Amino acid sequence: MERKPVLFDAKRLHAMMDRRQVDALIVRGVENSKYLSGFFHNGANLGYRPFCVFYFRDPAIKPAFIVPAVDLHLAMTSTWIEDVRAYAMAEFFTDVKTRFYDDFFQAATAVLGERRVKALRVGTEGESLTYGYRMKFYEWLEQAGHTPVDVGYDLDIVRVRKTAEEIARLRRATEITIKAHESFRAAIKPGNTDEDLHRAATVRMMQEGAHQIRFINIGCGPETSFTAHSPFPIGHTMRRGDFVKVDMGAIYGGYYADFVRSYFIGEASQRQKDIWRWLNETQIELGLSLKPGMTGGDLFDTYYRNISRHLGSYPREFIGHGIGLGSHEQPRMNHVNRAVLEADAVVCLEASYYHDGVRHHTEETFLVKENGVEWWTESCPRELIVPA
Image (tube, rainbow, N blue to C red; front, side):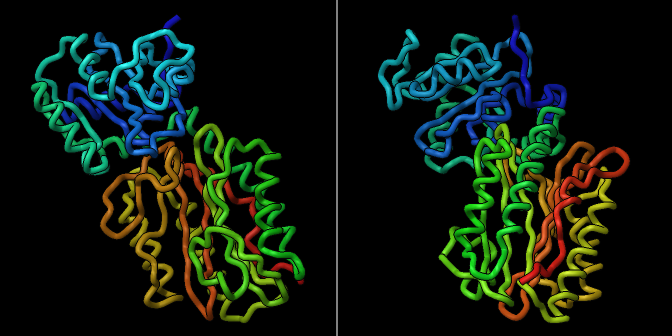
């Protein structure tokens, strides 16, 4: 039985290829190779281990997938692509009885040679590729008579609109993270440490069915209250008046969640309360107004104009981003971004402000629909003060 892609929208991908007049895509970026292959490999972050999809505009030309030998068997059982090949990397032989190519480019030459393709315009990820690989890759293409075309941004735009499967995974990742936040918030109390907070969120994520923990960044107490992304707990013991912030996200089926809440234990100044209220009210107002056709720049300008009524010289360069296989995807919501918001996009709106040694930070997740939005993080508490 023919295997079918489970993540990407083939019509949308082909429309982009038609528009850019590319005959094939050869992609190795972590997100794009997962998106096209459906194989959630763990090794592509290693620059010397390409996982590379060959996808052709002509449906009569079969796609191919080249992977390191150590991952061949799992790739064969995970991807919808039937032609999966391996080059010698980490293993010279495995339980799969097949030839391993000496290196990636030998395998790539065989893939194109067997398909007897000539003078292709090949879509690549351009400047997002590592310099050394890109130079060698482009030289290999040109020697074979093919022309590289940078479609990295175009692929980002293809991925803005999520398929039903992607939305299901993103929604589940968000639900898990909201549950983990319940446990995190319950652990905010004098006498507990930021390690207790980290443990509470970690354990709950796994109990709720997370496949991985993407990140749990905690600001807690005067040593980390100002940070955007404190990478690990420092052993601070909480006390009344402390500021506590968490930026966290679980992974489900390879897709990310990402949202933020901030708190004071027992007490906060009126200025702190006002800042928190303004950030949240303005952010939620924008989130509930999301609709297809807005650009990243439109959204930034609207938020900046509204928040500036309360907080002059607002410090943020961007106020949100798409989310999916990557934690920050298009449309990136800054002043100059013209990427267009589409129905079935999942986006995070976030706002922050520094005052009196702390970084107020809040973030919400929305699914944009043809008419209206689904506010996925609506149930997550946003009261500034937790009891001491």
